[in-house]
View (cartoon, rainbow, N blue to C red):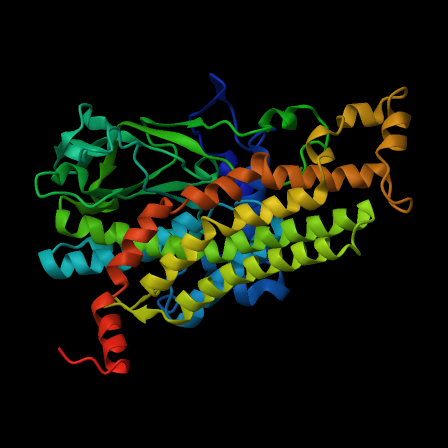
Length: 483
């Protein structure tokens, strides 16, 4: 069954006995919990759109090894065209959900693992690549959602993994057995993990020679013994418990993050893809980061399209659409959003073939893309808030709107143009609030800053690939300088 339906996906998650905690209490099911359900809906959209003929070209791919049509989120990129379609798919899903749809991290981890396991085998004579391909075949055949886990808590940032006062601040091996290893530690900011079937764990930084226990990459199912999640808070998250629709802003879709604990989790050998080869740990990290920084040129652009549409609509509802400064602000928002998209497409078009056969993005352009993402969405939402007006954050609640006594006053005094109901004006204002300040800010604004690495992480890579000596030669040649 290479392609699950939306309903089959939801049912499959319902069957997994995950250990999830939120607000100090154990959650029985991510499928039925009102705070978590919107994030599940976002993942379900990746299955739903893959079944639609009009989106087939973007949402699915033909695996060359099996000849099967699979979900593109389970695909290994085989050409620059695959890389471009990935970005276009992500923009589409951002437009449809206005949130984080959570499968990108796993897809990027697959492609980083594919080439890196091949390189490890070539250098050390291991068999990680065949192990990984077998795991990937299962993922493709069952159309699984796999959470990619990279970010460790890190503790004291001035110390390496092996020098921490508490060794568990980086995921590491605590016991080695003939049939596998036992690992302990945690991964932070795990996007969509409560909506996943498996988790694929990678190191978070390059490792030193004496940090072999930290150079570990593996996969385990979400019901593995000792694995549990503590869901992170989001602004306005408890609005989902109120039973309304307007105040939530985006009532159907959302994202989620969790602190994920590995409390002496056993990993069988067949699901270990790096185990002590410290020389290649940093390579895996950089390749994953490159793919994931490319991703932001698609997903954030799609959500940006919704932000721009919401700002343009509220300008109509406020009667301000003809003002020259409003028009100019909307133009600037579009300019910034399309600049992000162009970087995502450019680093894909310049992709190169790896020794393993899959394609990797242009590293410099992918990091430029993500560096722009750390800035432009902030300006886009600032302009959206400017156009919306202060009522975006001071409007009465949905319950006040529907109250027999208060409702008529809310409708009377919060009316915009006469042809638009106060309810529709409030719906659009709450959507902008959600995208810029509320739960979706985790999947758009704040995540734009820290997702796929902080701004300084991209600047380090940009500096490494800047090739200033060659640029100096070019300038000296034009100036006729001889040294």
